[in-house]
Image 1 (spheres, rainbow, N blue to C red):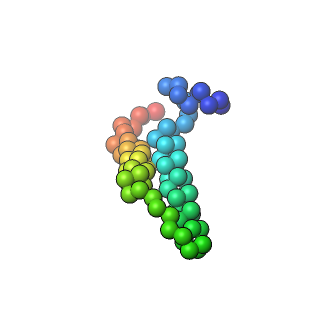
Image 2: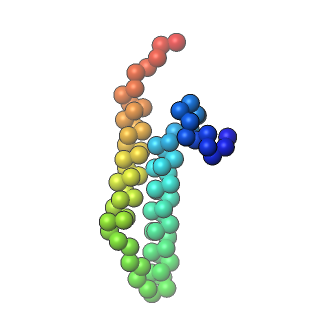
Length: 77
């Protein structure tokens, strides 16, 4: 599967999970960098607005995906 296939309407990937995981990965990198700089004795200044934005994107992506799985109509086979 090519990168451009992600943007097609009929693909097998869940875009909400991709966005949520990417946002979570960036938050994990922030956390690791904060720990490393703390060990080195320096303070890593991260804007609360930016970090909270990643938190909201992560929770929103996984929350919307979870809600669609719970409330979607079951197709009878």
